[in-house]
Image (cartoon, rainbow, N blue to C red):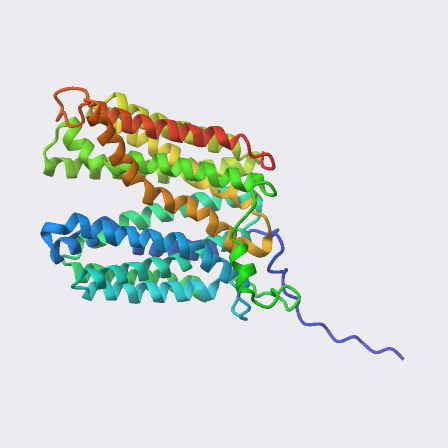
Length: 439
């Protein structure tokens, strides 16, 4: 006599550490995109408008020093928290998954910290609130970034990288628009917090996050081993090291190119303050529009050809040419052309370089931590660029070079500044050729 074997329960579709082989549904991509828009709005609404207004409201005479202090503390928080929370997400063993708990905690913590900023009436409270935003949203960013190699096959990561690049741009523009349109500092922070939460909810309800199986769970926690894990040996993982360096250089060149754009409009081209504000908005909108039109197209092209390096190399060259135009052209029409080139180059870069980086990670079990280490290359240029730019202009002036010309003659100072951005970006492109494991 035979006995029918009872049907087994459906198995987990795959291991949490396995490379994905099937594309996630469009619904999931849409939810991840919405969460990313909310995330970047939470970052850039304060950075673009609200923190500067708040610093002036606290002490108009010391507003630059206050803003510099708060932004510097926030940048330092970002450098530390992104890889640390990424590593924690790798080790998370909750049934909800590895990444989702950090998305939820990051969104809630970010919203609460924005509310602290809404009530801040002192430098100390303002700094604490902004560091809270940076810590929380970097926890969310680490999880959102790591979920892509968790869920998306290598062959379509260029496309997803392009979509997330558009989400970042929409978030930046949207966050700035919210902050400018709400009419008060407190209202700007409150609305930004609500947008962050509302746009994150759909992803939290359908994250498709996979928990670690008992066999995949990490060993007992050891602080010494945990801290040592953040050092990724360039000798053992040279492609990862070159990818980190190239991203640092390209982002440094981009930061040098954008940092003093308002002053460039005033002190070099010669617009008055009010008109310079409007011209910077036009350049920013042009840059954003071209980036959004470019990112997905070239991400898909990279996926179809299976090639990454050639796209990343040429994106850096195009961005470098934008900086060179600003260095030697020093007119409004050349600034517009530079904005187009910068948007074109950075649109390609943000989609394809993200896909390239996911292919050089040392291991599947540490994706969150390793991508967090990569994200340090995004944050450090924001820390170093102000000092580098100021030092360049000071040195040029000390040798008798002219910086502020107001449209009357050629600015040697800004030529050297944007020429430096050109050199840095070109180096970033050249070093991409040293990556061997990715075509």
